[in-house]
Amino acid sequence: MLPSRTAQPSASATGPAVAPTRPSIAVSTPQRAAPSAVVVSVTTTTVTPTSAATASIDSGSTSSGWIVAGVVLVLALAIGIPLVARHRRQQRWQDWQQQAKEAVVAGRSTEHLLPISPNDIDDLGEWEDIGHQVEQVARRLDAVADSAPNAAGNAAAHDVAKALRELSFTLEYGRTVQGGERPMADLVGIEVAVHDRRDDLEVALADLDELSGDPVH
Image (cartoon, rainbow, N blue to C red):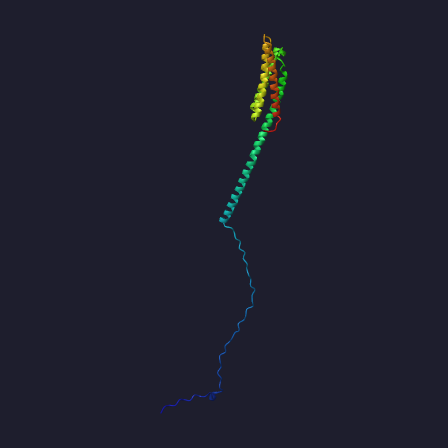
């Protein structure tokens, strides 16, 4: 015969019954964080030209500057050179005109010393002095001719020197032959020649005098 299970004492036998307890679960409610201020940071970026870009700009500026300077220089030369040349030409002409005027005065003074006719030469010493003065003035006129800035001035001054010498020479020739036995026609011819040479001198002096007062040619 099988042994019987020992009966478990009932709760009522040992004391009041205790109700089983459930474990409690703590539920936490998440707390919402207060909204914080949003800070927006704006960063300004400065673009610095690279050295290559700067060099390119500088090179372009330098090239433009040289071109402008070159154009200005060419214009200055194109305008300045003719003006300088004209100024120098004017100055040279004015200087020569002053010399020519003085030579004209000297030529007229010497002409007045020359006698009208060979018959008027009676003082040989005085006549020789006049001859020396004629040659001095003629050489002065030659120098004025050589320094003339153009062909017109050169020719005008040389014409006066030539006419002055020819008048003096014709008078001297008439003086040497008047004491001899010469045909009247020769003597008259000498007088006419003296008159013609004096007219030539007057014309040459007038031409040089007019040229010495003309504007720049």
